[in-house]
Image (tube, rainbow, N blue to C red; front, side):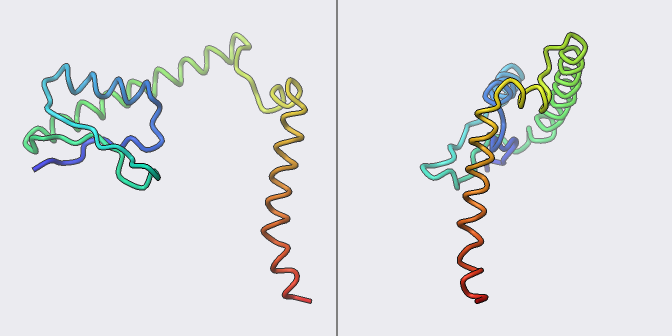
Length: 121
């Protein structure tokens, strides 16, 4: 029976591809289930052979630790070289986008709260 090995919800395309390649390179027989039209189904990788689960899980855990370290080092390097954009830098570089985003957030909050304020009166 198939067993879920890796959920792909909120996973970047490059990470999903790297995990698929990892499983393929280690001769793990798997398939991918889509999220469906509305994104409510389980978007994941499934192992066809349940006996490979422990080995596959171990490979993925090692991969994720290495990826985490790699991303952390890349981010630190970007900070050192000044390539990493902070919130303040983004605000200064794109003030119009910030104002529009803030206006949309405030509009949504207003439209959400107004019906309840009418009942109070």
